[in-house]
Image (cartoon, rainbow, N blue to C red; front, side, top):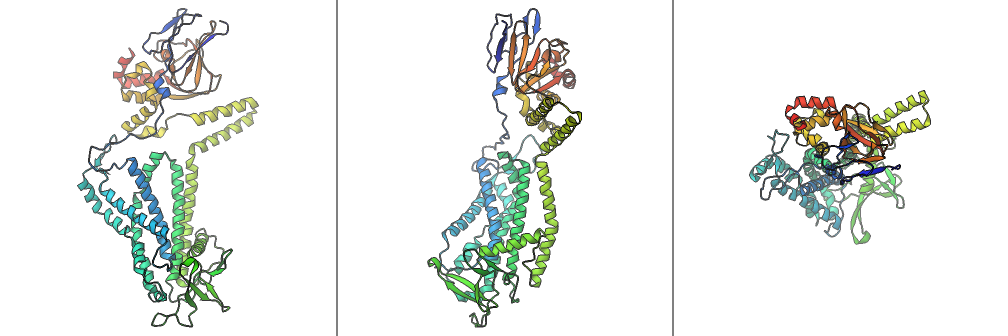
Length: 583
């Protein structure tokens, strides 16, 4: 017919004979080529398994032997539990320094606030459960030297022995419920007589530092974070950026807490940086950041000449001890709450670490000045490294994109210098943008892997595509891997002609995205539309033909892989046992 006849050659083609000619298209790769007017036409096969399958990014599961009551270290429940423990470690990292530096006594009839009570018990119970789980979780055998498989230690006696050698004792010390024990001891000691044991209370607060030993498990973070990153396909650049920002936050938090902790131990100084710092809380009143220690007599009572006094207030039916100190004008000013103290400490810490230093807060004692010098040293060194690292991470997060933008800038300069037409500029930019966004090239770094890993990566990506070709189907994995690394990526715009009938050819093509139109017989109007998963041009690469017997035109944006004759010959020379598949 004059309008021609088109066959949409999809994943489930059917045999059909067209009246315009004797063309028969068979889905079977083993079918012999058909003829049209005594012209040999190669069959183009579409492998439906490749087009319909999704490339899973999940790693191959590693199964343990059938061991009773031993947890798989890479199983999803264990992974979720590790993430929960990481969150609790972060919670501990932030709350322990804060509680040491800013904790204040309140009297509420011996009852803790419900939320704090529940959280403390939840954290401690979770840590103890984690200790028990560590006795029943398989570990990776350190003697494993085969990258093709991973071996695990599944004997609970060996697991327990290795755990008891070191990590168990750190975990136990870090899991002691210090806060709960302290609250239980001081529950019935609410009164002004607690002033007499103030120093002892400080030492009790310092005893909470033993919980910081729990943070020693953070040395396992790299392995735990690696499992989480692989399981959830997290961008490594994003993860590095988050880790750097988290380090900055934790460093600032800890230094702010210990800055205020110095004030709590300056018994021999009547003034300090916090006692001279006044802050106004909107909607409330003016506060002094910290009052100096009260002067007490031998019985622990505050003397009349003390510039600091303590008294009870009872808001919301809860008795709370507040501290007030005498100001220069003779008035009494209340000490700020812990949250306000932390805010002021963090403000001074950040201005010092970042070397901004507005000068509105000054150190008044020698211990404070020494600590401030330490902070400035850390700020001048550590923060400079961190800022440089963040800049480097941001640059590497989209390394491919940055390279592409540089290439596009060079291209724009070239097109401007040569004064290319507007239409040609737009089509050129569109080509490079599509090629950048849909490229399927295997990175060169993969070629540096061991032969086993290199083969596994290559076959995972393109095994289904390559084995759709009959003469590749029964070849060995090493041969297929070599073929895959010889593939060259090609990109076609809509309307581009890949090759025309009669031109010399020495390559075959694999269509991995898009669709092309095969002009079988233009005079009779016979066309075939091929979709992703198809291959064509194999007669030329096999040496059965020197010239193309059909025309291939892209109907959409297309991504293809090309395999030339010389590359196939190199593979056959390297793997002679595969030659029998081609004869």
